[in-house]
Amino acid sequence: MKVALSRSVKPQRKSLSWRRWIRPVIGLSVTILFAWLVLERLPLNELPQHLANLNGFYILSALLCLVLGYTARILRWWRMLHATAPYLRLKDTAAPFLIGIAANNVLPLRAGDILRLFAFHDRPGLEPSRIGGTLIVERLLDLLVLLFILMIVLPTVPVGDQTLLSHLSVWTAILGLIGLVGLFCLPMVRRFVLVPLQRSLRLQQSTLALKLLNIGFDITDTIISLGNLRRLTELVLLSSVAWLLEGGVFLSIATAMEIQGGWAVAYTALAIATLATLIPSSPGYIGTFHFFAMQAATFFGNLEAKAATFAIIVHLMLWLPTSMAGALAFLATSFKGSTSKIRL
Image (cartoon, rainbow, N blue to C red; front, side, top):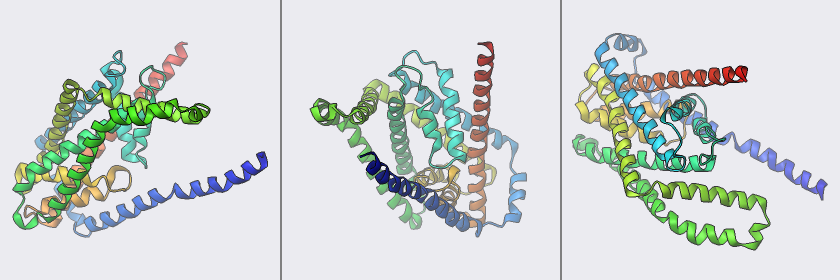
């Protein structure tokens, strides 16, 4: 029996090791394609000049919007975690969040989300499965707010250029509707699926099955606990503030570069470029973000070269400060951990 088991496991491991490269290869291919589409429209010799001509006031304005926006995101995650761990302090949430964002910026397969899952593994009420429930709600809230922003800016886009936006808004609406339906159906899933499975005598004899069921209960219970009207309203408001402030980054750079379209082009680029990050690509969404942000700017009559420069600068403003903040948070927590060990 042991020999047969070992022989059957080896091919499976080889198969899994081969499959794990599929997504990174697809992501890299997508990144190369969209990066090429952007770079062929961008005179690289003009990029340093555009960077040098940026008004310092608008750079500071963009940074302020970014800091306040991520403060709202950290506060939102803390409020979600607070539902299952009332003892958790806000300052304890900031470092894992920033480290996760920085890891997503530089590592493949959204490794930052995995780090966040295990950020509080030694604390009651903050098991990885429960944190996973908060990440699901976080993604759903972001999707719904971006859809709402897209619905507002869609009428401001010149009529002849609405085809892409129309298709994008329809598919986003479908995804948002599926998410909402799934959220409201969770209590029924728990009652009519998970509970009967837990009572099954056959499953009770399987340790793995019971562990998976417990994870399912943790995820559903966490999401259900966030669904009460007061807490959900608070989370929606924080999500809206976060995305409106992130749009301020786009608006500040658009104003500094004299991009045509004002607030409409800024929030159109925000919605389209962010939704485009759902497409598998490299860490930091290089290529996909730039191409769709560039396309949004061209909808308002901006030249492709200027629109491509706008996309690159906005991405740099979003990527570099968050990566640096995450790196500093990682160093601070590592130093704190090392000093505590020395004291012990």
